[in-house]
Length: 307
Ligand code: CP
Image (tube, rainbow, N blue to C red):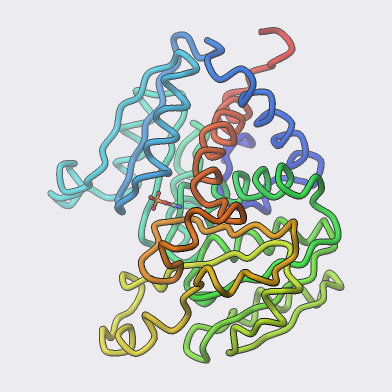
């Protein structure tokens, strides 16, 4: 595996996380640095995406590189039965970096093991979404002025939500307190609670999205119940609308509270929240551009000091 791959947020240290946040800040101030001249990046999306794919592609374009790839795997030779290994080996002949989303957990790790080209995981099943985590960390750092000692409430699909799984792993360096709010069917998996316990991180679990929880939070991280992860559609129908954040529920929230969501949202944030200054999810998605510029440059070994 190329050491510049980013498959899991666990692949990078606390110092590298802070360095990437610093680079994201730099790109927000200088979004059009032409540091990728002559570089080609592949975006291989075996699962649908709006923000992740388009922000990665915008990042490459703004940095002066070129993009090839597909947003619909049915137009690629995987529809004829070509294996993931062969697809990755072929694409590696053409590009300097591969950004890949796949529905199977572990697919990005596997891809990174069959090529010398760096691979960035743009989401693998319910497992990891490390570039989302970097933009989440950048958003938290920008809005709170720090990453340490924050109370972060995660709401919704905590079982299948790869964004919350990655965020827990990254936040373990920064002494958070977590509130996990989910119905019994979508509780935070034991392995992530074990990570909390092993790192001395305080957490609560609740099925009740209570005013006390909202009003004690610095970050409210809402998530979508993901229909595509359920094998039984009746199970999805039972839980799909279980939590909805409404504007009135934020009346007594802390001044610094920000509402984050990786998006897309369905019903879990009412549109009446959108104009509340505490709603930060659209800016959060914008931050993805700068975070991904930082990740791409790290993967390609580009030294910003020399540019
Ligand atoms: N947050 C996120 O991954 O959005 P997309 O599915 O639109 O890429």
